[in-house]
Structure formats: C-alpha cells, structure tokens
Image (cartoon, rainbow, N blue to C red):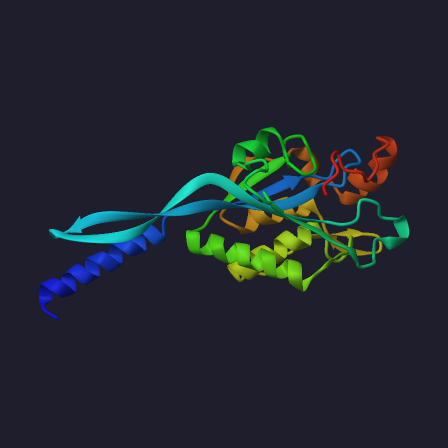
Length: 243
C-alpha cells in the first residue's frame, strides 16, 4: 500500500470515528417524594437513524454512515402492582416494566413532553426534575440492551429492595461501570428513593440539570411519604392506569 492510499485510509477512519462519536443523550426523569406522593424514577434514551452519505476525501469519493438524532426518546421504567398492602413492601411482587412508545401509533416522547406533560402511561403532569447525561450512539444502543436484559433477569418488584429507583441505578451502573447508590433509612432497613437518586446523580455524574428539583428533594422519605400521606390524604394510586 503506497503512502497516499494509507493516508486516505487514515482520513476515512478518522471521519467515521468522529461521526460515530457524535454525542447523544440519556435523560433521567425524577418525580420527587413530597406531600405524601411516593415519587418515581425513569430513564429515557435518544433515538437516532442512520443516513448514508457521500463525501470527498482528497478527490476520492467515499460513503459513510451518519448518525442523526430523531429528537424522540425511548422511555424505560419499572412499577409494582397497582395495589400493595402494607405487609407486602418487603416481598417480591409482580413487576410491570415499560418500554415506551410500544409502537409508532403511540405518543411520541421527547424531553419537552416530559417537562410539560409528564409520562404518557402514568403521571400526567410535568416531571419534578430532569437531568441529562451526554453519551454516544453506541452507549445508547448498549443501554437499551441493558434495560431489556434486566427486565428478563429480574421479573419482579420489591418496594424495599428493587423498586423503580433500583432499576434505573442498575441500568446506569452496568452502562457506566459505576457503583452508584441512592439509599436512605426507612424503618427498618435502607431503601433506594427518588430524592436520594437525584442528589446522587447530580453529585457524582457529569450531568446537565435541565429542570432542578425543588427544596423537597432534601427531605426524608419518612417525612414526605409516610407522615405526609396522612396529612395530605394521599393514596398509592397513580394518576393514570399504567397498563
């Protein structure tokens, strides 16, 4: 291979690498625990399409695959049964995982949708906090694989040991090779909670805060959920039937 051909190959590889590294995003969706509401955590991943383009490098025509963001998201979360008795919170119960939208006929999910309308299958009001983590198309594809694999691996929900927050933490830890935790003491053990999750990711990951949580994020689950559920007469029902 002569010097010119070698140079062209190197330039081609560099061009493709730059396209492949074009940043995309993961969004962490948080409903804080406050005024008797349990709160919730989910994650959304950028979708993209591949467009084949032509380019000229040193008067040689080549083609490459360009990754284009569609501005739509794939959303993942975990729920337990709609009704959980007080004595079931330490039990493994039936899980309800969601990967949305399930088809092109369903609501298109975007960051703006989460900020202004909430979740299409449950809370129909804006999320309390939204943070963004810059990734890459390869990482986004890997995260979707991880989320799908966990759904098969863990077909259960446990309020104390494997709830919505734990699911998202597990996805992030496997993707980023981290060991993030977001636990607080809720008699008589430690459990992951949305408020602790928000504080953890903001402190330990290079995230961009799109919408900051309110002052309630600094308060305890015991106060905001258990005590205030009586004061504010909140139930564990969700605003919409998320089936």
